Amino acid sequence: MAKTDTNENTDIYEVGFLLAPTIPEDQTTAIVNDMHEQITDAGGDIVASQSPEMRDLSYEIEVKDEGEKRQYTRGQFGWVQFKLKPEQVDDVEKIFITSDDVIRHLLVTVDEDAVTAATEEEE
Image (cartoon, rainbow, N blue to C red; front, top):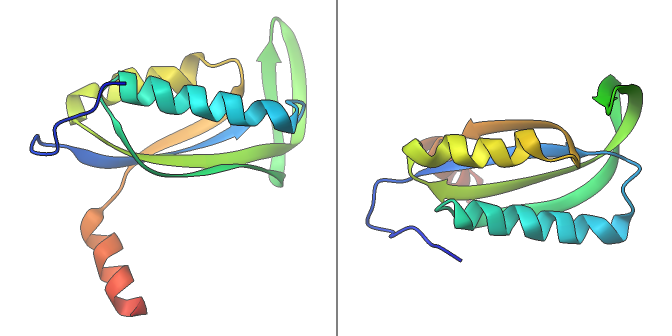
């Protein structure tokens, strides 16, 4: 798997994703491992992640799947943080956009200064 050089200009990103509740729990590990592999292949370094857990949604989500509409009131929520050069972030975003398993995702830049400040306040 490709790794970025830690001396290069990288940012930390986090993507939260929602998998369909119909995916068997034993398959979610393989899906997440594949996501991690694709992120590292795109040049990222995984920092942290949380395996998907079933959660009730605040509102119903409607998803078109092969011309058929499906409504979900539950989903399996997980997240992954990774370091990546800013110019490569579109490649990682495509992983989640094109995945048939991901029904929603949100990719954000992590503010390292805010995380450091919050950690210091907790100590």
